Length: 502
Image (tube, rainbow, N blue to C red; front, side, top):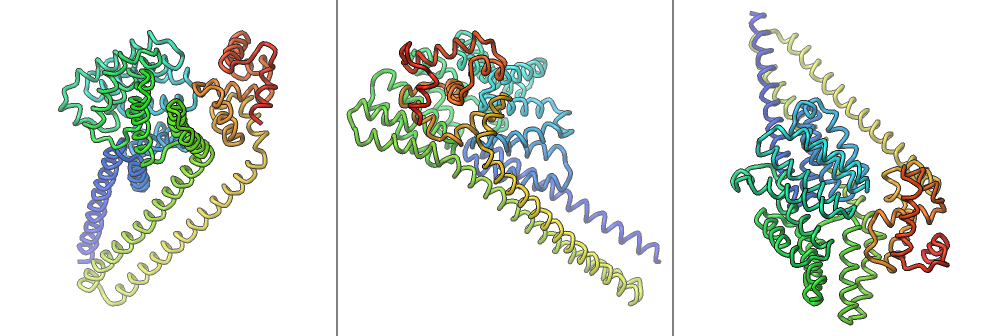
């Protein structure tokens, strides 16, 4: 009789475990699906769902679910300009066994790496990443693979546009368009939101034409991009509306350009974004008002651009970190509640079998064991919380020390050619970009970063050494910067930057 009781008891326990595990996996799938659904519509919601999914997947030790959740976290963090945090999750996802065994996940993380390198101005690394991913996908003829290939070709088109090789940019953009357009509409809309880039593929084709000042050729692709974004339910349409504004500005229809810029800015304000694009858009609005002769509005948006440049990034980072902390705390509370309810159910089941098959003494021993188990669980939870507080306090102290060493840090980042140099430089010298863009608003981020090296006092040879480029290349860059800043031959670039910026 006793053996029968033990068998029934353990069978019941195992059944409960498997039922709970299945429900947990279903919940993680729902969270990942929600993260995918909002990836283009509301990246902040996508980040929230992905973070909750990652916490559950980590507890279940499910590599596939962890990899997918980390992808959406990193993707959303890149959208918000949180490059350091995004890179952490990219690395975590790549290390997962499930990623290593899936061409789809490998390609997804290759795409993420490409986006990361592009945002960090590591364009050559971006090109290598996209090229390698295309090689891995070349022999796979599936909808997912074709969509991923189209994304990589589009990224390469963006890379060639950045280096002014417009012929190669058009070749890769056309390949991207050809691939995505051969997929039937039904199959396209059945694919994951994360790999549906059709609107942005048209957008990058238009960008190439605009860079060549060929507005008439760009216009059909601007229309396609915007209409595609609307058909997919994308709420964030800022880039497409801004591109309409650029088209009308190029064709000297300044009033219509202003109308689109303002609508674009209105859409942007609904979303938390990194400062670079907010600054660029408000600067365009200010410039258009200047052409239209509205001095007050010109100055208003110029001041607004300045405010975005200084404060927006800090607000963005604070909001996202608060969100992630709150999600984690809510998850801990929810799991504690689930554990408590589960323990109560088990207690009743155990008590029922004890009353039927064993004596009151055995019942008392079992209750004592359950009480000890609850006590140990509570004790372990307290220890874990204390350890988390210690880790957070340690991180706060480290950040305080880093602030004191800010200048030495930026020098070290420059000398080591760190991808974080330009982001950190802007934090330490927030006025730098604002002042230099007053001279030429069309300077690229790479040119601004080069000016930062000069501003810090590095020589041509030192810059060449740190950036692994030829001295002649740096001399050419210096010449081009002088030309774009309209400096006379008698003016020293370093002295000019120092006097003008300060």
